[in-house]
Amino acid sequence: MRRVIALLVFFLITVHVSAAVHIVEFCPDPYQHDDMDEYLILYGTGSLNDITISDNKGGFRFPAGTSIGGYLTIARSAQAFAQSHGRNPDFEWLNTSLAVPDVVNGNPLRLANAKDELLLYDRNNLSQKISWPGDVTPREGQVHYLENGIWDRRVLMLGQSKFSPESFPNASVITFVSPDCSSDVYSDAIRESSDSILVNMYEFSSSSMGDALIAAKKRGVNVRVLIEGGPVGGISPFEKSLIWTINSSGIPVVSMISSKTEHAPYRYDHAKYLVIDNKSLFITSENFKNTGFPPQGMSGNRGWGVFIRDPALAAYFSEVFSSDSNSKSVISYAGSQGDSEPAQIEKHPAEFKQESFEGATIVPVLSPDTSYQITDLLNSARNSIEIEQAYIKNETPETLNPFLSSAINASRRGVHVRILLDSYWFNIEGPNDNDEMVNLINHIATSEHLPLEAKCIDLPASQVEKIHNKGVIVDEKRVLVSSINWNMNSPTFNREAGVIIDHPGVAAYFLGVFDDDWNSSVKYEGQKTDYVKIAIVGIVIVLLLIVYYRRHRT
Image (cartoon, rainbow, N blue to C red; front, side, top):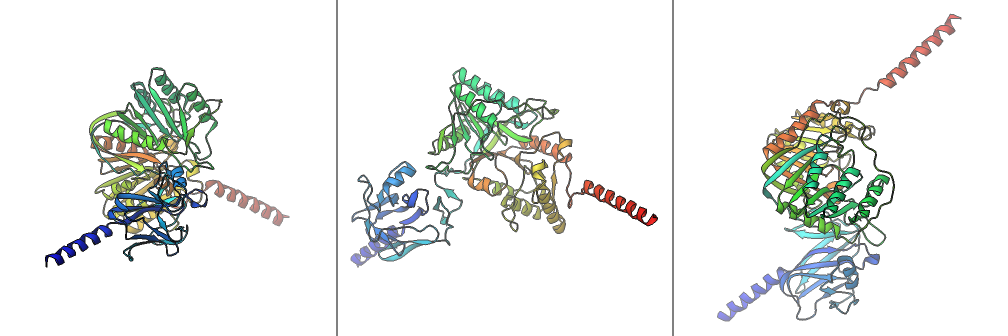
């Protein structure tokens, strides 16, 4: 009897251990030629003697005596995998490296890009099956991964980070807005630096902001700059000139950009932040341009920003900077000599000054890693949501932007929602722009009798150049300050950065700015009246009447 019980216990333990071994990650369509760097990762504990991997055309098992105690990486070519990932796999199924052991092959495994499957057998019993398309959606460069029993909770591309959400309590916050007081806060933040400054910026062409970094370098501060190497429209001549000047001062500037041999992990490095002395974070919706940070009293974009003193938060963003700047797609960027960016010429009476607050809780928001937290923020609303965005783009003509959908659903449960969009010419002159989006939102509100309203800003009345903001206020308590645009690309494929600040004083500050912009704005209801066309039609009718009268008179 004891022997039977012992055998039963042994059998149950063996089954449990074997069942714990499963595929948790794979990439069937990487960037290298002929997909030589495709791979899969197993996770589990125990013996692999009875584990077989197959796609019903080829496959492998492991050498006798192989065991697993955590993660195990098996690549098609160890050499190719090392080139892509900077490390060797644990096994390979093509014999390319003497340093990496081979699995025991049947027909060598070859994962098809568009349609295939992975099968894991335990003692010849099918234990796991992953099919694509089906369980995952195939895409070149995408890493498919299993998390909490769900495949691909986000789109994860090769080389991208997987930062987890964190919360940092008791932070000190200085709030500011562009164009009113952003330059002053930036200058103060750079002047107080004494050890190091890390800059991650999508576009950087402001000479005064560059000069501040050069001055910091001269007093011994270690300054490093990471920029996007291929922004929309290319790097401007003004940015090239400034980067040349910054490099000449001894500050290294690098750019993230895809090349013939390396793919950038993100479509755009669109983040806009600085880490100062490993103690503080300066983060904003605005690029380092004269429109984003004009001198006080001059016009520019409407944007939000915060300067946060918290060493743990700064360490978090230092790690983000290190992860991104160490990408194999990041290269030195020299720039070239040229003219400086022209100064702003339009005046703007500064209404809002910087304000300081203590005891805030900060939650970082990174795209694509944790951008789902914006949806969580909107879904948490109980009383009010204010949204100020450069633009909102729907996923398809039939599918709402997911952030917008969450905001509208909030209004359906009684939350009062206000949405303010830009009205600069390139955001309203097309057939599917902000004015049409405002009409759509207001139509939904009217047809469903929702506490929901949308407007486009009246730029002359507000005296800002355009809305470039990407901000949200929820329940007059929590605020999102970020670089994340409301389209499909920004939260899914870009490197973006933001923070959610939980503090009623901070929320009240930005709510005051929002209300000022909102109250100077116009509501678009239906198509705008084209008075020029009406006048032309009237003139034509008058001329025709004159011709008719003269002909009949004679």
